[in-house]
Length: 222
Length: 166
Figure 1 (cartoon, helix red, strand yellow):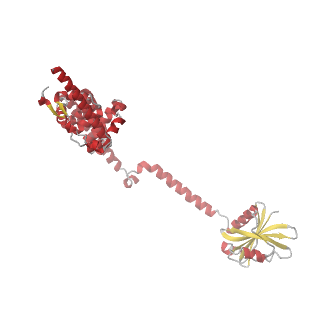
Figure 2 (cartoon, one colour):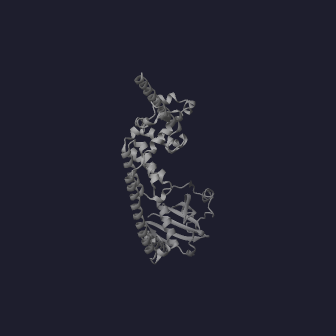
């Protein structure tokens, strides 16, 4: 055993690995691989530059939006959809029924719902006290004179998005129960004046009129 | 572009893993090919990037289980004490130059790689731990085990030498 050969492991390893190197042939091969790749990359870059130059020369929207060609179909589709929505909204607004007709429809719908009354009383005062959140006092319509008509009760409802009263009222002559609606005229129907409109909607007879500054509606099932 | 010095540097690193010149060249060639196909603009440190590629390629080509051997629990138990871990000093190992090749042949690829990074590239244990993403304690336990094995091997060789001389 030769003691002069003994050395710390790091020095021994350095010396060991220093002796390892690629042969000239292997180095040439690896260098050639890199040179080929570099030449190929230069060609690709030149082609890409050429394509980019052609693309930027395009006229129209592409000039302002470089990537426009990529999403032009989405752009056209969105424009068509927006146009369609605008037309549909305009058409709906033009063909909307008049306010009085919409209110009569709403009254007929509410009547068919046949919601139960919240307060049961024959006294208009009692019903008025209970429905104290209304912005108007409930009235007794002149056309529904008390000897022939009897209040049964009432509840809150909505007419044209506003709080209104829905009263059950009985015609003592024919024993039929009607639904009487009362709403402030803020809910619309200024154009009613003193006219009384009557219509049959979905099997419900509906009448609306103005009285003492209120909008009144009467609904009955045949 | 990688110069000849860089290529030799990477070749030696590959040898530290394979312990075989031809296999090291094959892996290096494969990785250089893959590297040239990659988007080079994103690669800031080509040599470090290629080292990672070489390690991954080597792991792909060999059995992963064989490469990443878990540290024996009994070894970990024996050197669990922090003082013992801090005492792992590779500088204390002395070897004969003529035995280096044989000694490397007895080691696991990962052990050879760690030794190469420490001895030839002169990284600290802390740096190797970060580079290879191995917890410092695990790395120290591997080195401790390696050191003990080398010493054990040297002792047995000395006994044989003495017997031959006597």
